[in-house]
Length: 257
Image (cartoon, rainbow, N blue to C red; front, side):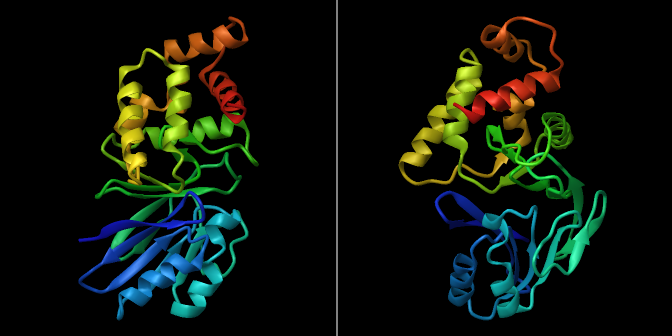
């Protein structure tokens, strides 16, 4: 049975740590800093770091790779379309890769970066999505277009609703404040905002989320909803907009929120 924990890094990053207690092996996702992983390995003598999974090339996701690989000999997996230091296996759309005895499907999700990938484990319903889908939000468009990100989010949103969303930043509270501004009459958003506010007040992590919760409370997955479209009409003037155009307006609004 795989156990998953979050190792905090920097001010708001999480490095996801997958653990196989029987084999005493582990894997990490997006180790921007080697130190939290090294500390965990030091505290768990006899464990082997077998795999390092990377979603995209930003430094806060790759900064610890080379040190951890040198320390452990771990295999480095990452997107084929991006420059990833120490990468052993370059991954593209639809490929399957085995990590700790579990098969993960690679999903290409351009938008935040052009080569960004996500890892999906279908039996356990785990989604490691880097900076594409956040709890109640989505990543900024540093390289891709709004249409690309809208399409990428749509692909992730189409996964089963029980899918657990393991994103890599603790942005949930600020994202929910924006969501509540977009949909002030959405009771599920209000309820989630209250819950996450209480969690964060005592230092509790807000992740993982679930796709069911995201579909109900994440404005970036709700650009086809009438209430969201009406809010954009209210801000920018009424006109016919596709859901991707509504998404683009939401993302631009959030950038300056």
